Length: 504
Image (cartoon, rainbow, N blue to C red; front, side, top):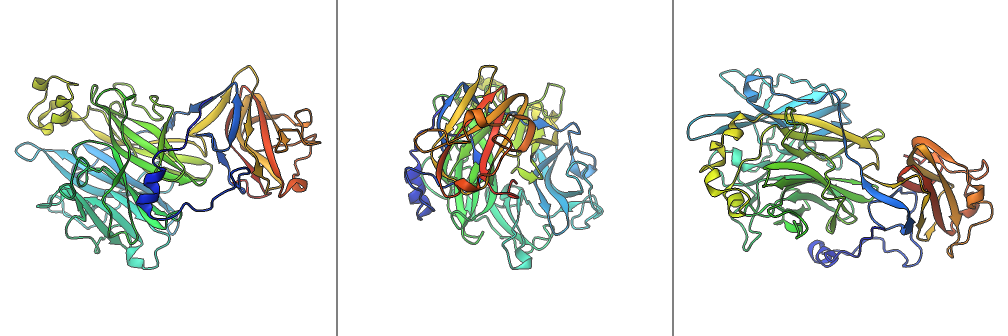
């Protein structure tokens, strides 16, 4: 059985956020309300038998790549940096980076562009008329390096409805750092900062200043702040967290996730996209392997946004395609989107190796003489092309507890029953599940024992457990109970003590 202990960085959490942990619970009986319980750790679990915790690889969409270079201004790469759904327009919106390879002292030219879609799969390039290319404004270019865009549903000022963190590397005469922008439509960024709010030279020590990748998660009601995950330094790739009360004044990021001795030598973390759902945090971590110059995506998990655990490593949740495919070498995930009953993960993909840096040579992952003077001079960088990809899974589907042909079970810790039914998200197409209800001491309740439990079969996000045809738990409301879920040849993604009509 896999167990996670108390993260040592809870001390860091208290110091960093300067606020207390919300909603303390009884040490004996958990208060979980109606919230589906995620199975990436043992928070709700007392014991498992003959079950395996598994990270489920994301399913790549058959329409991939969903974005490819087509227009002259897009150059050799169209790399998505943000995809979101705008409820006001009922459309998906994408901001992406265009990269043209050049000759001479300047090896590339980067621009930003905008696309829209009704289904998130087929993308249109609207004629915006905002930026000039080759003497014409008939294009979909956005005149600001909006690498990460947030659509802020909390914002009352219409001119700040869209917020962005940009990369000053792509602005002339600016030090490397992060820019902030505000917009009413996500296209015209009149409220942008004139200089970086964080730079790579600000700060002291190993983690000094800011790196060149970042991902804005958005407003986190848990902490009452905007949260972004950034590289704390350009000297080494790992993940830090920063926060802001107003999206303008950001703190230097504090490291929260760093490669450890169990990783292969030289492993580094490029960036991490984050989804908060069901009260927990999922991180899609782009992991750089300098021995192969490739980047895949691994899964991280947190219950507070500070103490992170990697789940299922070293197996990626999103891995590269075959050598002749668009995503054969480098993948960087965007913040996942909830779309109906599925989670969508858009990602930037490249079909060539990562540039070899002097740091890689210092790690002895490659011979020094194999590294040209600058990354842009490396031939594979000039040849590579970039695309937009889409992968997906069911909601709560990143991690499951799986059973084989031998029967297994999980036993929960005691929790207060607040709902009137038990709902399970499970695939029992090849097997079955049965749900048993116990008292705090582990004794089956009359009428809810294993012998009374109806068999759950098939694949559904909202199986309703029953006992001799009865699914009503009204008589147990307010009582401390345990669940014992028996499984054979099944995958269990989550479960909840829910209330009728609240299964989503």
